[in-house]
Image 1 (cartoon, one colour):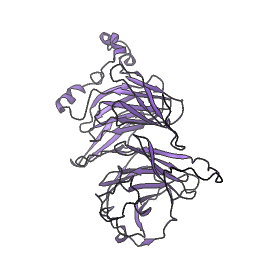
Image 2 (cartoon, rainbow, N blue to C red; image 1 turned 120 degrees about the horizontal axis):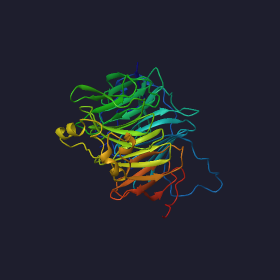
Image 3 (cartoon, helix red, strand yellow; image 1 turned 90 degrees about the horizontal axis):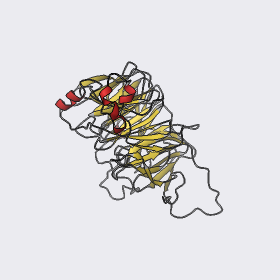
Image 4 (cartoon, rainbow, N blue to C red; image 1 turned 120 degrees about the vertical axis):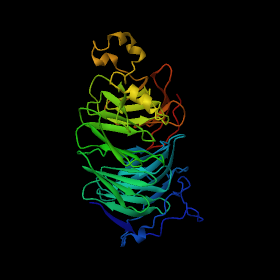
Length: 420
């Protein structure tokens, strides 16, 4: 059960009023007209945060440099142009290309365990975390960066595992349930039961005319897809093992899934639940950390605990005719197009193990094994951004092979680019 309350604050900020945007790096969210004061009685305010924009001047020599914060969570925004870092003392927002810190908010030691952006607008969702949480871990705080304060909250009986935002929805994930709210009035739209979901797995489309939500189902290896415009639910039996990770395209028409085994990645049509393509990350089990489609759904990036980021070429996209989808997914072998490295085995399909007919990645980048990396595609063509390494790589879409590192940054300690 979720409860709604509001922090004492003026009505939702008016982006047209003068001096209403103290942070020029953030754009006003003109799609919202909320007035949280009218929803619930005022609540005590939290201590104001320390506001820091990226300083050009060095601190005085007499002031010792504080130790870098511990990062608790990293996430890209909806169009992968920015990313947010939740830390044990607040949160920071960065631009991806060109890389730069946009701003930070520090809470005098209060930790943020989850921060979710809404494109580049002034509204964020925060969840407390770390050894000294700034907010209770069972609450989602609605943060307005124009005012530099929380203007509302959603409370739950269980710890919050994840938050996803759209301009018209707030989705909150707890251990075995997902809550869907209207953004305009915070009205609860739907509650969805799931299998235990400690990682807070959930994905939502981002096009205004297409609202698609994907989450774990009620059975092992199952994905539940909600098509709100069509008012229908589709269940996809994606894997035999538990679901470890999944990602939607921006329009929600395709979903990529990985299981806890981590060897195969499968791409499904969310409308019919048909398997369109299957690619192989490797032969040994791995924990998949992240999956990311390119904006055109031509490429899929994958990161895992094996320390290698893979880029796969997709033979499907969100705009292919439904007839072609049906033909290409009539059976699992038809959904697999062997790569150049396995063409010598084409005539032996059905004789050799499926491993030899697998489609492998076209490009790779090797990192430290065991570290947690999150990937997304950059704005520049054929580039991949890797959080954890804090850099940007480029892959060759024709010849593939090892990706080329273009730049590297330590985003906790900004420094000049490393020339490569």
